[in-house]
Length: 229
Image 1 (cartoon, rainbow, N blue to C red):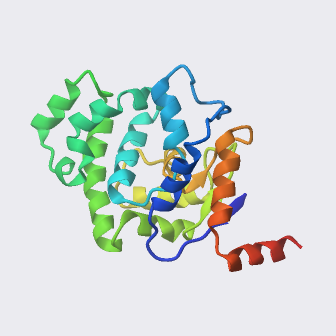
Image 2 (tube, rainbow, N blue to C red; image 1 turned 60 degrees about the vertical axis):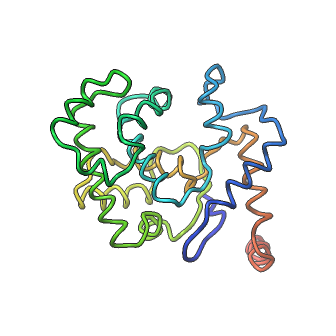
């Protein structure tokens, strides 16, 4: 388990987005084994989005909703329906979703473009209200998450849960969220870049870690070097 960096206060996603933009001049030849290279949508998600640190509430909510629908299914299945979900769920706006009524639930259950699971749809509505409550309480959902992660970015592979996802899952369920088990929350932490799980043979595992190291302050690098002695 390697913690690559720590942050204080509000973090912008520009740094990691910049990493991927810089990497855009390089062609990714080797990817994580789970990436279906026959699916261009999946390849683009792997290369440009998965594992990039994002701290904005809109994106964090979108991914949390999508991950909750993944339960029992593959992420590729959800990803293929992502734009249909965006249309059906009002652009992933929690303010609107939290006010959905029975008529809207019925409409969603009749929409063949999304995953039509009554329990998951109701959970999405319930979770959106709780998400907004957390944002109001902490100022942002990322700041709330940092209470469990210490603001760290963790580098690890080969796991489906850890202490961070366990603790986050317990608290969200205590607050009333549904479909937020530790496995789902771990996948979410990976998706939004809090946990970097690009596999050792993946080009992005080396390049993202290298660029993050370059982005550290001189003092941070010296401290890391001292710790290696």
